[in-house]
Length: 138
Image 1 (cartoon, helix red, strand yellow):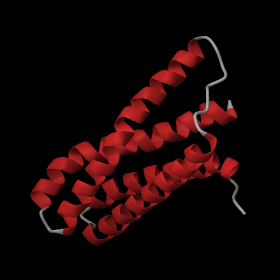
Image 2: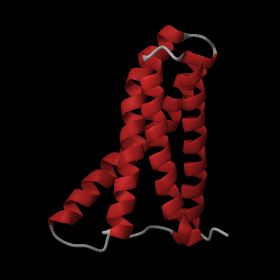
Image 3: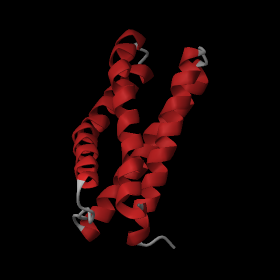
């Protein structure tokens, strides 16, 4: 049984999984494997939804978690956290618009926004793992 205090590790795993799926999806579309790209990107979206649910449950139960270290590493941590958080707010909106355009077959507009969505979503996924590692493992 997964408890609330296990959720940060679950969240890091979901973020890492999303990053792998996003990268795989990018490689697939560059290789014109459209159906595989579609499946992988829908899976990345579902993984990110699972992350968001777990994240909200965790923070509703635990609240804010302070970074315990001092010095330069604290500045590094909060710089990563702030950029991660700011961009994370945009990911659901960007991902929904990008996915909706693809599913409707509006590929010209899909590509136009995907060029923004992918790097932001990938950055948020990777920095989510980094934040977890810095907060709970180092």
